[in-house]
Amino acid sequence: MQNLTECRLKSFISRFELLPSQQTGSARKQRGPEDDTEKMDEIAQHMDITHKRACIDLEKATQLITQVLQHEVERNRELYMLIRRLEDREVETRQRLSDQAESNSLLKVKIDELQKHLEEKDNSLTQANQTVAFLRNELRDLQQRLQRQQSKDRTHQEEDDWLQVGGSQFKVDVCAHSRTHTHTPAHPL
Image: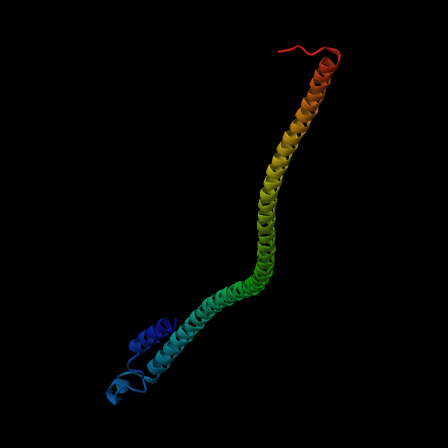
């Protein structure tokens, strides 16, 4: 806008390069005082019109600059609000990250505790499995010993039974034999 005003001012000055005060004496002599007054009035009117145009141009430029500045102020206000929202989000995000880090830390401690508990249970289970295996071996040994003992007991029982049956038979045979010897006369051979 300043360039526009400067251009108009230069244009105005070029039209009146030689104002009456700057004209040579001979040019003044050719014109009369009325011509000088009329010319001065013309110049004054022209300057007044030019001044009014310059004021109007200046007012338009001022309005334009004011609008641009208002637009920039509004844009700055929007940017400020955006920056505030982003800063608030950043604070919230930091808080969430901090909370998440704390939660992760607590979960890690809990996982470590559960891992330790699991290892203890695994060790207990391993010991229990070893005990079960040992007891199975003991049970198998005891069952084998019991079977051997039962087998021995059966053998002894069978021997006892045989002896009892055989002894009874022997007694019967002996008794029968002795009866035959005592009641029957001996045959000569």
